[in-house]
Amino acid sequence: MTFKKVMIAIMLCVMALSLVSPAAKAAEPAAACYTKKAASKTYINVSVATLWKDTSAKRKIDQPSLSNPVNMRDWTANMSTVKDRLWLTGKAETQALYGQEVTVLKTSGSWAQVAVKDQLTSKNSKGYPGWLPKSQLTTQPAAYEGCQTAWVKSKTAFLFHDKKQSFMEISFNTELPIIKSETNWVQVMTPANGAKWLKKSDIRVLAAVPNIPKPTGSALLATGKQFLGLPYLWSGMSAYGFDCSGFTSSVYRYHGISIPRDASEQAKAGKAVAKSALQPGDLLFFAYNNGKGRVHHVAMYAGSGQMIHAPKAGKRVEIISMNTAPYKQEYAGARRYIQ
Image 1 (cartoon, rainbow, N blue to C red):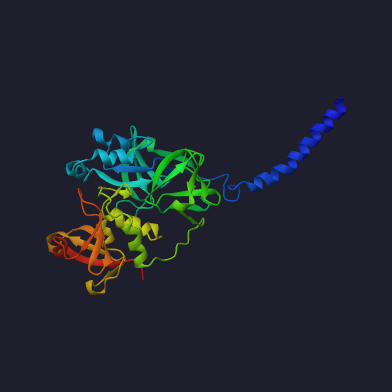
Image 2: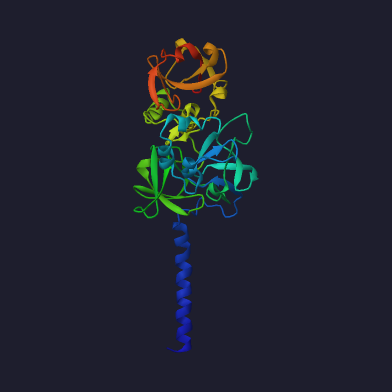
């Protein structure tokens, strides 16, 4: 082949590529929602991060919750006695889910104190604060905030590398940006582990700016009922275990309603409801000193004089009568967050 013919061939290849490239780029699902020059934000980079009151030494049985990746099933199984779970009281603060945005408040050695943006509290205007290992965080450009969102509706769901090999089990209420959608699958972008796949049957798809319809009380109750039998976990905010206010705030969050993280503050939000006017989905509060002292517990009204709640260490999410002791004596009022 002569030099002239070689050059012509090269030029034809370049022209062909220039024609194919724009079409290929247009077909890339991330092109429409990807932001090239996005500001960096800090995200949770494990399936469930437990935030602690301080950085003091943890127990050997807590190690599965302090690593990256975490193993929530091993951790909760390790706490085989009520005493093991009671130990967390006053030591663990809350939990945050994979991909959830946090603000770093301060650092100390291998630990960071962060505020969870989506958890309302009077403790910090930036979100609920607590300490976690730095290894459970990642700081990345917020390049996919313009994408649709995959919101996990199942109790747990698996992320897959290639629709066959599992990568990570994630919890109910986890939100990840969608970069590609197929008949039975969506491809999502993870905080720092690249693109993975989720089954559509495990999620609901929301617009880039979610417009979640206002729920009915029955819808709130139905969401809560899927966790019946789940063991209580102090600080719990995931399908591996809830505390009382973690349960109620997580159910409401799934339906697009932000309420405070803690029971004492949930009792001050929303609208007061008379006991005679209760409807499913209303929150019920219980306080020391026969209902006149500090609020220490919250439940959701389930209709017909019953309530659903995450009771305490050693117990499971259950539906019981409001007249069950000590709740009957400690009833301190109810609040409604939907009209």
